[in-house]
Length: 269
Image 1 (cartoon, rainbow, N blue to C red):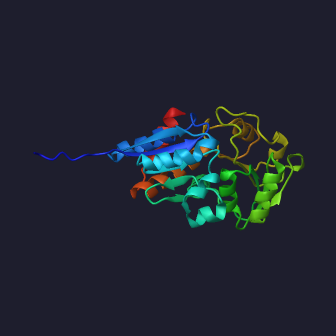
Image 2: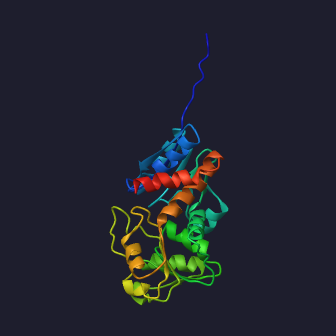
Image 3: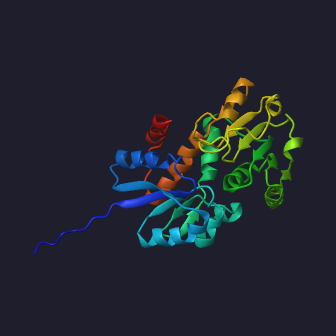
């Protein structure tokens, strides 16, 4: 009898809750098509209490790699061998299930998004909004040669992050217009979340650079107000694309088609 060779499409995906807003599936699937790579990328809605079972199931099903978003970036590191950056940040956004290893490509995404906007933060006074996984990556990326302040609605969590990285915690009612760069590392402004900015327009009067990690919509209410105030703005779209490209390269060993990935995202926005 002639032997039939079996062939399985490689499966990748993103886990989070909620996840309907994610543009990672069309971005990665466009890259697979462009490179004629037999892979597919899906979105999996996973609640906090289901994380461990979801990861066990993903491995059992032979899923090759996962991206991780809100609210799992910190807890997911309990289940995999962390990269050096993950160990230092305390959060991961990329898992290579075949190697049982987790990474943080948000760092690369932040660096490249700022670089793409012509921004090289050095000697900056920086305000980071949030204390979750994305905020941790932002603090880690920007802490050298800069003065970092962290503001967070849950005071204890914000203070804890500030202490971990030797930064300063600031109450929202004490924030003045004295920063060179403001980074929104919260989901505020994202489709499905509140769009009321966490800071007032007065904080923007000295025209700081405003970087919003939210990418859907590409121009949040915060960025619109910042533009009206004459600030230079950076959308989360570039961060999404660059962190995704780095994840793609970790999983496949291939150079990611960044332009193709960005085009796929912008077409849907």
